[in-house]
Image 1 (tube, rainbow, N blue to C red):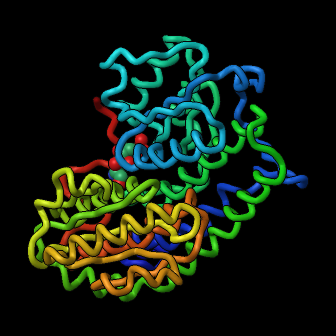
Image 2 (cartoon, helix red, strand yellow):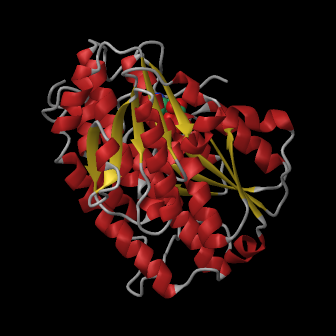
Length: 372
Ligand code: AGP
């Protein structure tokens, strides 16, 4: 009913708008007065966590994209090797797992059969499983050794939005908690990241306030057949997520690529007026990546692409090559997906509407996939 949608036309719009609160709620109560993480829910004893020598993440769809981003954070903050695997592929390749492996299963619904079968397989091999889940008491957390709940509230639209942002927050918390427990990350640095995370909710809010040009742009692309998405580092999974949203909602051919792969093949796809969305890393910090992506934008534009550039406020280097420029607030590199994903959600939702598609219930899809 209209009341359930809180005045929005679709649940998806309501859920996109709820993201600042969902992010803040997922952080709430998980940091103590001294700035340390208190993830009491992670009931795997610190002694066991200290002996872990590898992290493996299993998930499907959007949750898999959150896992891809988590890998960057976990390896950076804990120096533990981390693999990310599609849950549907995982057990069929006879993965190497033992009691020193921490498996993280990410699932909004907690009922995805592929993810459930992957975690059962991991536990049979003696690994500890930590679930990151949005649904209290669902099957995946019940069958895991521990669970960190995301506090997005119920997500009704088939296309995942707020659950994704909160999965990212939970992944960052787990990465920092592992760092804290294993002694690779302490006090000041954790406090600094937590501070950055706490202000991210406001940054998401600000992005939401600047989406009208994105909606307008989406409407002009309604008759296109293909949209490509490019990103690097944590922007690569963001590009994949942008493409997935567009497939699900607009039923358009959409593909995400790592920008560095362009020259290894995908650049052959570029033709006159093809829309290409590029997620640009911050020019601060890893400026090498920034410069490389700017030359990618230059290259594809020279070949006729219509460039839609998502870049930090103040990043002037992209301006000459952007046919459309979408600004996002300045954030630390690892956290950028929390703001960069939002315009892609709005873009896909508006394209779906412009194409006359059912936003909350896309054809052929179910909210949770309980078959293998
Ligand atoms: C996202 O928009 C999708 N509808 C889908 O990819 C989803 O993320 C996937 O099926 C996993 O679901 P889960 O998080 O409930 O396990």
